[in-house]
Length: 195
Image 1 (spheres, one colour):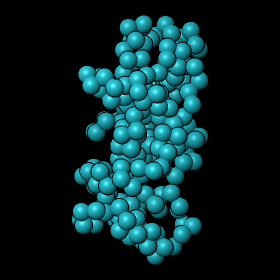
Image 2: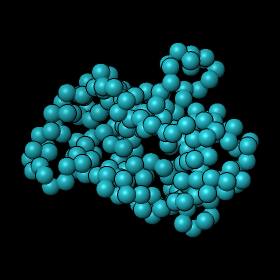
Image 3: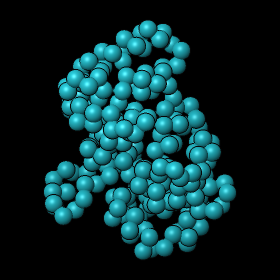
């Protein structure tokens, strides 16, 4: 399978993906092999159903939200490059001093981009704020029926009250960042990819 992965992925593509995502050559070819094994239609793209067959996503309460993050607005398929861009958010962060060049765009796995990715999991209507209802929906996905609606409402209200600095009864991305400033997002939103 590994040989199939490297023959279908051109060296120029691997180099472009390396620059864009920070993954190594061997990580890219290994992930390409995984991508092709998920591609049941063998058409070079994945659909939502392909992701739903991944056991870890199928049992994750936020699995649908994570799966949706792989698909650009209005799209129902993702190619390998889009797949890699999304996975790059979960790459551990390298030495932050390496990327101080102002001409180089912020890496996909930067703290800010990891937080933006997490924020978008909560911002269900994509209006750049997390409302009480959105927070409730995501909390309900995470805890299921283990907590009463009253308890969930109380948690949502308290969370909004603590995070909302401008009094609009919602959480903006800036407020989201502020709430999570002491959280080790780099560690919590990282997956160790084999080299």
